[in-house]
Image 1 (cartoon, helix red, strand yellow):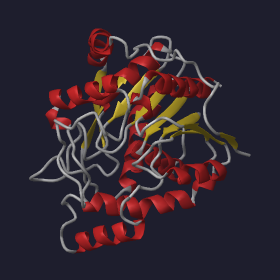
Image 2 (cartoon, one colour):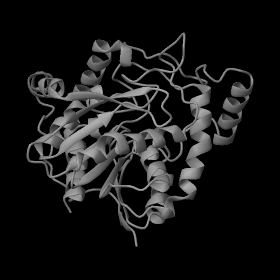
Image 3 (tube, helix red, strand yellow):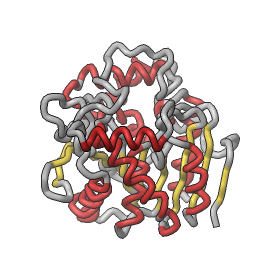
Image 4 (cartoon, helix red, strand yellow):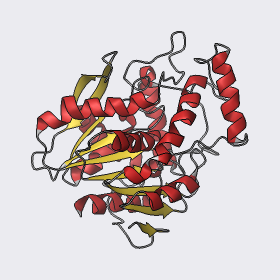
Length: 333
């Protein structure tokens, strides 16, 4: 049976975050950045042995368990320092890595390293399995948890459908089960990217996509309503230009639109405990598919945060604290 929770009013602690928005930049510089620098960087081979992926870990001396953090499209673990700090502060070891084609892992488009590219979308889940087999399982951690955002959420579900999972519970932040192609109908958008790939433009930006704009204003952004956390993200990209991605390629969009229907089709086969955090103001992924997923996955919970934009864990304190508290409560049970 599934449990559906619509709108979060009582669940989770409002004090889950160690860094409040008040005096955020100063506290971030004093606490999060030194903590992030203390992490142990590592590499591991992608599942197909083509490339080495870049990761980081923080091993807690008295860990309740280990949380694997799986980031979204065009992201890097570099922007997750605050989340790592919070999870560690609550007694967990943390490990994360950058997907192939983004962040500090090798980018895939020659000539413009900012174009998000993937040859086959199911390679993402295969790489997660490579991390589990090469890095996590040899560590003999007693309790393992998975926390995944956006594209990472879709990858996590793909992984759970295809591989034997060691994770006791999985939390998904705004998981990508279907891309929001507005203002174009999904069928038209898919046809355009398919034709673009056939014409040899697979590694070019899809329609409307472009390089990262370092001067993009906070006003009108689609990811967060927290000016403080928005500024912190921009500083990450300013300080690490080698990790920056712009928009996705035609190949990436085509592969994502080919794979996500397959993921949606097999959700009922997942037997893991799943927490789905839904951003009420999401403009990147389609929320109705998350609702359907919560009814199809046998042990799923859906929590809606009505005022949140897409990046729930970089949102304003009331939203982020509630979401983080919900995740910690879910993992502790």
